Length: 222
Length: 315
Image (cartoon, rainbow over all chains, first blue to last red; front, side, top):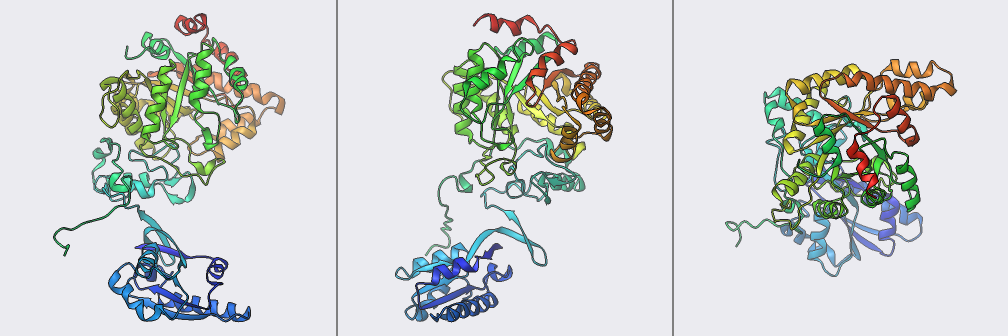
């Protein structure tokens, strides 16, 4: 999923301060799963903002809505009935959702309520960790299902570096050394001989080095 | 010979090679570079010039290498993958070679987390093994990494680092094998304090015949004090300092600890001279360059072979 965290309250207050009414728009996809911008978080933030501005003597009207997906025009269209009633939109989606709302409603200021973090997985209750950087040319098949691009601090395709210690990365003892994980997996799978194949320098074009990326599925384009 | 490198010449002759280090200053003083480098004249075959080591901004390795070259010394250009993409690396390699710098060391570099710009973006376009491959391709196939022909290819003698003490230990010989496969010519190891473990690694290296494919220079760092020993043991990632070494440093009075550190380092060199596959020593006397001539002399490694001194006479 795409993970995100809510921005600090002070920053959100600063964003919406000039307005009398806002639409607070959540998203029912990834940010709901990582408890950053779903229906529940929309409710909590709406209350907090209303309370703050009430105390400050300039009441703020907050309309709440949570779309099925904010990265999809079909759902973003559903804001059309609310949009004229508010001065601005505060989106609790990831950066993709924020941009889709901004694109669809060119005359309405749109602010992000979240900081979009990474593509990750849930490690345990309340903990998410990065797993993928969308580099566009997956090497997981060579690296035992552990990504060196997203999970090695030096992005080594032929690790580990000299800073791997007791299975941990030199930058932080709470971070696993990706190459220790890779090695452990290769051993468990009886694939250790593949370690000595040098992975060649990566072509970063599919990874964003060639400019903003698109996928065009000719078979689906209407 | 693949290159005109003095280090290659000495290693090919079978003599034990000696290299050392000169860390460029945190400022623009050419004088400081020269002062440090001058201490090493005549007692080493090559001088590594570090590339923003510990991820702290310093004068560029290439610029400092040029200063050393102008002094008639043999600089070894260190280059890390942290700060440059493959375009920048290749253009710096061409520039270095244009200045007569013919020996380099390919590294991934310390993570910015440890330095004075932890907020900087890291590059890591390629890794150190891919860099070795790139530099070897520039030399042997006369091609840029992108595949185009080079007009005037740089003939670099290619070095890399190896840390026999990092985890997982069982992978450390294999990782060296990967560097050999990529085309590395010489290796400088992490500082050696745990000799038993180093010898165990070397046995693995010999089992695979890697010692015949790459010249291994043993990394040596003299310790100034028991404080430094403790720091290296506890704070420097990938460093293996046995308790016995810390105890020995702490067992002598403070004013005698520096000499004890030198003694340990001389004993280490003596023992490693007998290890098959060790082809020389890389002395990293951190902010203690003035001790290098004494160490080299007391280790019985003087005079350096003629070829090392030729450059000096040719100024």
